[in-house]
Length: 104
Length: 169
Image 1 (cartoon, rainbow over the protein chains, first blue to last red):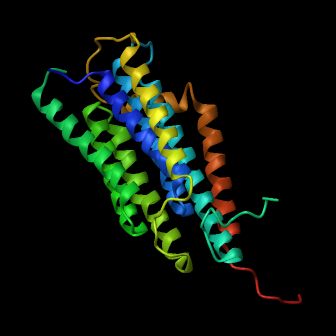
Image 2: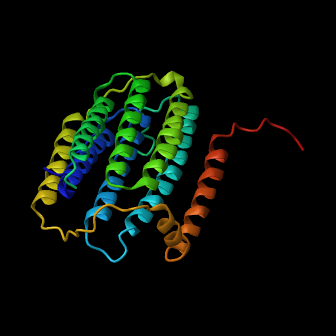
Image 3: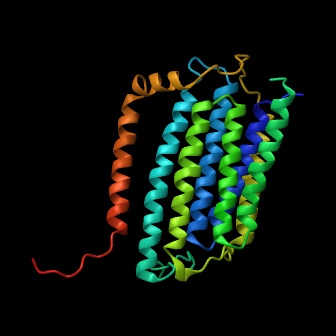
C-alpha cells in the first residue's frame, strides 16, 4: 500500500471542484474570492505532485512555478479585497447579485 | 513510498483538507468560513510535506495562513452592513452541476492517463535548488513578479484610501 500520483491528483480535483462551486454560487463577494484561492491551491497541489512523481530533467521547476502562482495569488487577493471594500463604500453591499451596474 | 506513516498522514491530511473545504461551503457564518479555509490551507501544507516539498510547505503557511486569511478577515470586518451570511445565490444548482462535472472529468483523466513516472524518490532538500533556479533560469519571471507585487500593493492602497477631504491648495 502506497500513495501515488493519482491520489494527490484526485485530492486536487475535488478541491478544484469545491472552489469552482464557491466561486459560482456564493452570494458574498468574499466567499467568491475564497473559492478562487481554493482553486489556486488545488492547482498548486497538482504542480507539487507532478514535480515529485513525474519524469523530468529539472524536477524542481514545478516548485518554482508554484512560487510564482503564490505570488500572483497574493497580488490578486490584495487587489480584489481592496475592490470589495471600495464597492462596499460606494454601494453599501458586496452581494454579487446586487452589483449589476453593467446590466441593461 | 511504501512507508505506512506516510500513507496514514496522506489520508488524514486529505480528509482534513477536503473536510475543511466542504465546511467553507456549508457554514452559515462568513467568519467561520474563513476559519475553515485556514484548515484547508494547513492540510495542504501538510500534503506538501508528504511530497517532500519543504520550502513550499513553509511558504504556504506563511503566505496563505499568515497573510491571505488575515486579508479575508479584514475584508469581512470592513464591510459590516452587508451581513455575515454565506448563502448561495440563485445559481446554486447550476454551480453544483458544473463543479460536479469538472471534478468528475478531472478525476477520470487523472486515473485513466498513463503518466510518465520516475522512480527518483523523495527530494533531499529543495530550497537551495529553488533559489538557484529563481536567480538563474527564471530570473526574468522573478523580476516581473516583483514588479507585479509592487503594482498590486500600490493599487490596493490607492483604491482603499479614503477620499481626501476637500481642500483648496
